[in-house]
Length: 314
Image (cartoon, rainbow, N blue to C red; front, top):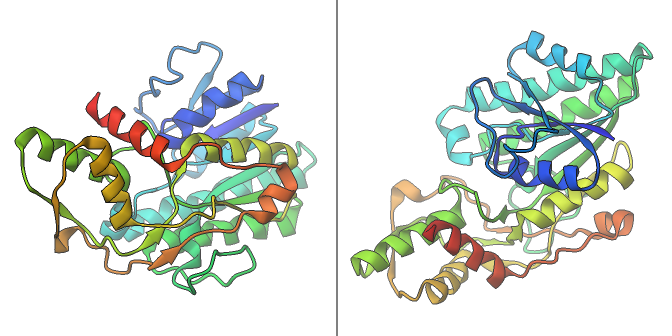
């Protein structure tokens, strides 16, 4: 299959592109102008690189010349902190950019010039606050951040084009995931880095945000495995949770990281690190995904956390 990956230079893209190549697909890697290819696939001369600015309609329309059979849409303002600081940018990229992309692909379908599949990588944060039970795709959505709201708008835009033009659209709502290569804007690598710095300095305290929320943490390799399976077996018009269903409090994640690093600290709350609208519990039910694709996560939490620590050490 000829697959276009937007945001191919990002964290998830650095894992997804090599996987698709290993599976024998022809990969078109769309990256921001000026962005460098990730080390994970930069030396693969079989990958065609193209530049994409989702806020530029001409840049988006130029993708049609590549004639993709499928598009995995990863490109986004993916950091909640970045979206909070500039919500306008998050909405322009995440919502408007997805609307432009879906509309462009839908026009190909409407005019009989192609039948591409759009796999939209969304987020579990669209569910917002709710009961302390695993979220299902049929649960109401109630985002409480600019990031989540703009991603839900992206879903709405893509599904509107699906209904209007017949564009095949599959939505994947991924719950929290991490791994080697994720930067310290995200909680697990951030905690790992602070612990390693504290160990070197023999410091007894690190600054943290709110450690009470319960999350699940999957390995990014398991998430991209789910995306690959959805490309083959996902049903158009459907939404799928990508989730392990195994919740853990962030305070317990810190305890496990301290055991791996070999340094105990006191966690001191820093108001600058506390999100203004945290979701107390966000764990998912992936029954629909598992039934459609036989997917299951393979990497355990301790193995995942050790990988993140080792990556920070390197």
